[in-house]
Length: 524
Image (cartoon, rainbow, N blue to C red):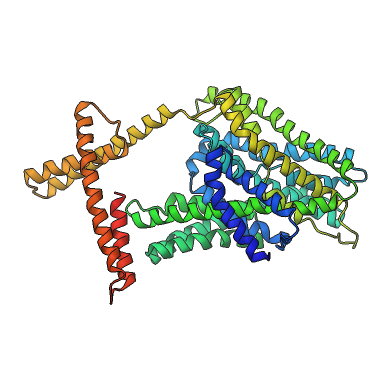
């Protein structure tokens, strides 16, 4: 098997792991990691030949962009306090605790190398948290906080990692310089992200075509990441800023085709890239196995100790952080999404899985320092990092669905249905208001006016069938019959157009264009 065949296996596995995971109630990313582990121990499977410094730039931009599309800037703003406590403060605390313990148990480990280890295992993975927690039907407030933490904690951790590695390589460290680099990295990233987001927004208006606009959304995250890194900013924060800007300002309510196609496209990208990313985590296990040759007992003990530190620090931090957030929320009456009990706090604790970023940072540790000597205890750091990743991702990922079911932490379905119904009523009222505006400037026949009024009501019913009383239920039954007949009519139309594709002289592009219009109409 060569590298290309291995990539095909990972892509195929990414697709198959979704229905298999749904069938057995297991997260697809964890299944892909297990697949990678199985492939790593097979003799005929080649070692992954991807330069470590390219793993983050290749995988993170599309994954981050796909994750941000499911959220909004206002959601982050509403949760700024818990996100700050988890994505910034907890990363610092975890890094410090891991560094202290690592230096104490690993003989001769310098403080800079210990801090680098702490930084690369500190951030829970944004992709793992979103992919795993999002499939379990958790309350939206929990998913929002986990998404926010996962998306922003890499910013803090990667900057800390670079500062620590630079100190280990050069042999010198200045606290003031480290703080300056942290602030500069954030400022540069935000400026780059806003500039590219604004530019992409303007360019989308110029492109017009849905295919070209979606193609632009593929390029922009990579451009944002690379440009920010070139200017010594945080590539992760730049991608987040760009994606949030585009999601906020580049949405046209009437651009149906771009929205439908873009949603489908990014769902596919998210599934495939996520699968490959977690498959690579399992495949990279061979590096850790090779490192521990002849020292299994000692190094497994070190890894277990750091795993315990990472897991316990998160729990001990979450308990007072949740209490503090609740107190501030109660005093200021702020509409924040916070955990509402010990059960949800436990789920947040157990959702702290490490993943793609930790793997890439561990493998990217330099081989040598500026003096020509080997990077201090690099093999030990890589092994411990993989121990933390495997323990948190596989163990926590496999047991999280059971824990969620055991504690009974579920989304408030009644509240969600009520909100959906509220939106349906608002949509119907907006349609009726627009009809009245049209009637004020155009003279409509009474029959047409009544027909349009029914259409306005049907808009709401289609969104939320639970809108009303017996009259509305009767209207829903009539609407269901109309939709069935209309669907059969559209099906006949699609079959006729599709049959024309194989007729002599038929232009397949024109056939596909007409078919696409019928497909869009079928979704209305």
